[in-house]
Amino acid sequence: MKHKFVFLALTLVFTLSIGMTASAQDDAWVCPEGFEGQTLNFFNWATYIAEDTIPNFEAACGVTVVSSFFGSNEELLQILRIGNPGYDLIVPSDYGVSVLGAEGLLQPLDKAAIPNIENLNPDLVGLDFDPENTYSVPYQWGTVGLGYDVNAVNETMGGEADVNTWEILFTYPERRVAWLDDPRIMLGIGLDYLGYDVNTTNLDELEEAKNLLIEAGKLNVLAIAADNGQELLATDQVDLAVEYMGDIYQIADACAADAAACGTEYAYSLPSEGSNVWIDNMAIPVDAPNKPLAEVFINYILDAQVGADISNYTSYASPNQASIDAGLIDEIYLSSPIIYPTAESMENLWSLVGFTDNVDVEQAYNDAWTDIKLEIGM
Image (cartoon, rainbow, N blue to C red; front, top):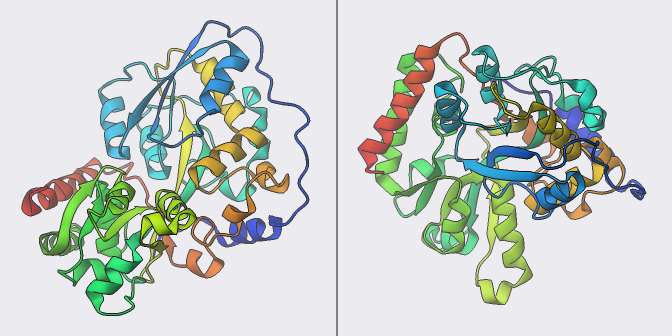
């Protein structure tokens, strides 16, 4: 059985919220006193926050934020297992939270210091990777699917292409394809396509998925991208990219705004076999130099206006129900089935779990991914 979060109710909440009367934010977020001159070290995914979010926080609190970036949950896990080099706040995905928590690498949150936690959608808290939200609160959520150049794909297919299936990755040598450099997501796609549990601990099934990806990789993969597949699409280096929906939405929107200059059209699909739905979360690692300031920053991010600004900038789905209820999320995003998938699409989505009690299985996934990249020369 596929492991799923409870998203049907969530989808209905978002749908019902569209068109609600906007309420003005009379008061900007106010920083608590006593943090002037301090520094926050923030370890996040790249291009994953609004341009003014951090400068506004620095000005409000009189602090400095030093931002660093990682490219995958596996990279984040590897760094923190060696020892926290000085990060105060990190943004692991769902299964990353469960692994880090189980290994004692996260600190419990002081929820009294984060009153804006009440702004979160109830369907996005208390999930099985952190049932009591002991260590984490949601930051953004979304899906992984196929981003593609509509004209290029249709041209090589000799007509309108079916991009609603992962089969297009596995069977067409004419495709120029980019994969995400993410072992769990890519092997999950292979497992799902073969009809297996995406969180399988059966090493024979994992071997089948590995071989499927090796065969496909030799067929048409030109790049394994560290979260920049959208750039490869936009610069005509690939026709198809396995990517996060917000990244594809951004280039699709920019292209549509200047279609004459763009010369093509970009789109995004969630394959019918199923795909990954994820939640990224804010958490504080063990040995964080400044836990109190990290909690102040979390509370700031969960402010309705601040949260809306981030989602409106990044084109990812907001976990902040207060932002939605106040009409602060742009309706073009709320009404987009790319950003907020339909209930029908949600039925086919799967989430990844951490192998918290089986390090050997986690290593088997990482080894399989290494083998795949070596075999296809990436």
